[in-house]
Image (cartoon, rainbow, N blue to C red; front, side, top):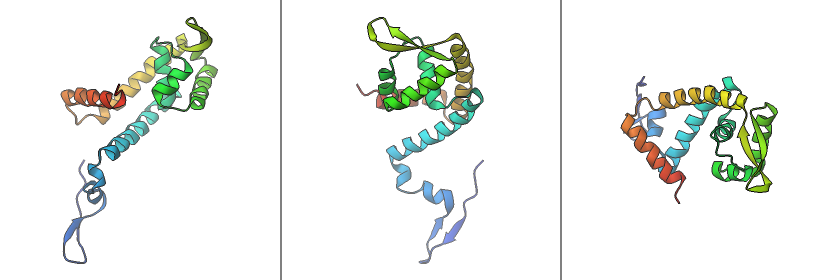
Length: 163
């Protein structure tokens, strides 16, 4: 649904759009960093709303997704990959562990470290939450063609994983 643009006369006789259209035409709306940040904020809000029915938020969903994917990450690896402070990861893992969705297991490669593994309940919840997350993504990208969707994913991977 497109909102009507209201045009007002400026003090010097020039017309300019008001409200959202005026801000969308600003110099900031052409700034790539701002656009990425705004898109991130919009997608996080929508994802958090959809994941709430599963008792998750985007961050806890991300930890559960990696645990359910059998990559067996350490908490340090999670912190680096998710770009979170290690103390945030500890809190997220503690919360998921309290709900019996994940468990810490000794890393066979380094007995001093623990890896994160999803429980059966965690895998089941992840499967349900993943459907909700995908529905949100498809809704947010409804105006984007499947080819552009894939290209956007490729470009974002280049930015997210530059090495």
